[in-house]
Length: 420
Image (cartoon, rainbow, N blue to C red):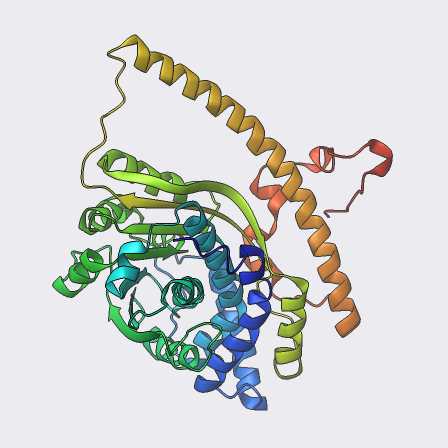
């Protein structure tokens, strides 16, 4: 199942993040006319509310402060977050399929693919999956019937159902993201709190899904009063997955999220890692995508408010039909394997430290170019909502300080930046 020969990966997503800006602009305008001065003001106010909610993240009792109960809030969230998150999911899903080229073969042969987006909200994951699957199936669908592509979004906020429907309508009109001649698209939204006992319809979806996505979902759960229920919830989801299904996880690189889901998967014993883990990964939108965002929104919202980069961790697990043997040192051979793995872990820690230095440099260079772009557009760097995301400060996230930055270059060639 080699689709790389007909479409090199570097070309498949070359302009994807730029195209996403126009795609989500069309989605938003189905729900709210951005060109209306009144709606532009509503979206700007909604952005401020969203940012303040994410800064403090939780109320005193731990419950989420933001409720996406209005079109303005949902559209503001989509405008700010969806292009960056969708581009990140598409990139890692493509890499997953390149390293596991037969993973979707059974679905292709049976002409059906069931996707479940856990905490999927505005269906940003669906757009990424649709883009990759459309390209894969196009290369493999010669003389085949249409692929029945069914997506189910499970989320606590029922307002996202309206946005999800608009995403599906826009997908069907965009052959680059969804090939209507070779695929049929079915969409279902289920309102559910996954930290509570699961209802039968939720269980059915989880049990029948071929692909499950969990994108920035644990951040929401672990930032709420239901944090203590997270391990049990994850265990239930993994247990309900059918054999051969895989779950793609992508979330903030904040310590605790990946470690939590990884521990649950390991304890169950019948989940194999098929991609990653890629920890502390810096994903950035291209500057051409940022320019497109400015073209579409700057006049009406009067600010640059898009998320340009995110600092994330990602991994994927496939459900096996048997349990893997536990690690016990009953033989010298197993003990030697353990020692070798410990040496590898030590090497890995050194590698991660070097990678953190590299990505810090990369982020600062990127931000410098972004500032120049904004100055050209507005006369000053007017990124109004930069303070929302702690992930924007890579130096803080990886616990670096000024003395450790830019040490990959000789002293006379280093660039020094004021962090104050």
